[in-house]
Length: 241
Length: 294
Ligand SMILES: Nc1ncnc2c1ncn2[C@@H]1O[C@H](COP(=O)(O)OP(=O)(O)OP(=O)(O)O)[C@@H](O)[C@H]1O
Ligand SMILES: [Mg+2]
Image 1 (tube, rainbow over the protein chains, first blue to last red):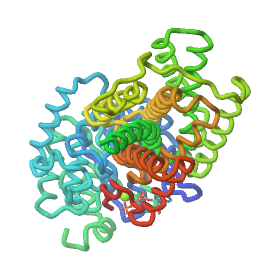
Image 2 (tube, rainbow over the protein chains, first blue to last red):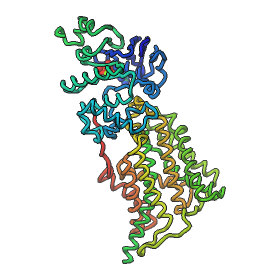
Image 3 (cartoon, rainbow over the protein chains, first blue to last red):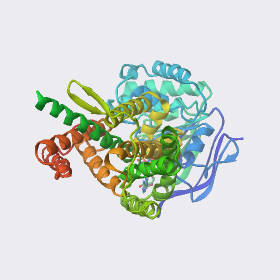
Image 4 (cartoon, each protein chain N blue to C red):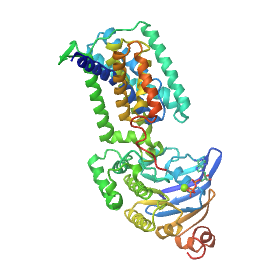
């Protein structure tokens, strides 16, 4: 049984249809990437999974149970952590507080334990440790991105949804980030990764899907996707691979 | 020497009066931050608190302390009702329908109280039986002292609650980005409910405290709310510290101006101060401290 399964999902923004019958699955322990051009519906897919959007058609199954009507708060408590596009750091809270609140989906964990876990996150992202007590809005875009991932990890998710985590980061930081994503995955977290940086994403993924204007067009292993002419032309910058 | 004492006396009264504005203004700001909406019934929370006190203490003749606590508990319950009756059904709409809804609630509350208690203003007992104390020539009225002490305690409590507890942080997170808060598993509806409860208790407390000074009347909330609203603007719209400082400042300005210039125009000075602030510093004392990054 897949950990996550989407069955014929359609999602709308008012009258605008963003997803048209999307079916995909993510197995336990897998790292799956979702590729696609701007406006293809990648973020919408993640929002539908995390409950920010209620699909107009189809089902989202998590551990075999339908969750698409549960609402984001309940879905977070089931162990799905969504690090959304745009980072969405709480501007008026400190870096440490932002991280601590990442654990809001877990009930009854003592504050002390959470503080300890926050310290562990600073070990994963040492660049933001010295801003521990700075307000969220004072961080640079890249630092906010790291903070967003650190906060997402505090949920101890079974499934981590990452929406373009490399966006706006310097190449070296991107390398580090993907190394971190590999580590997170090694620790048994299942990941659904949305990326524009297809080369990077495919280098860490087990499988990938390509989304085009709301419809899934290609599915396969990184090797298959890298070998697909259409995919190469559209997302991998020509024939250099 | 006497002039100094008199001024200190007026300053003291101004601070006490200002404390009342601060409490109501704090309630204003907490709701503005959580819902982006100005609650026009905020002053009526004070009025309701005062009438709850009249009912429990004068009506049912409960002991003062019990009536005091019962009034605050009643306000907490009222906060929940207000949230689900006035705000919650319109939470997905723009701010305008919600503001109109709070205006309607204000009118409804005033008329309901009018129907039950009648138009006659009610006197209320002071918290302490003692008149007050004289310190170095300045007479400190006991009720004013109580107001100052309780306000200080509430401000301190609010600070600790919001800045040093995870629940306080979750409330702040909710007011800063609701969807993100939801994604983290923070129960946003509950957080907003708590905000309304807290706000209603603050307002009710202000009403119970100011009752012995102003008399308890249907319209008492409106004038307090106007001043408190002015205080939030003077302090910096939506700023917690600003609300407290703005309230105190307004109380002091009003009292000093009334003493030195003329008493009948007492209420006008607050709005004159507001007017001047809007001209020279429209963002308020603490405004524009946090800017948002794209
Ligand atoms: N809030 C919204 N209201 C209306 N339409 C929207 C909204 N958000 C997205 N859309 C539309 O839905 C479609 C899918 O958008 P989505 O954000 O899922 O794309 P995406 O694949 O994440 O793109 P990007 O790579 O630019 O982030 C687009 O056509 C977009 O215009
Ligand atoms: Mg997107």
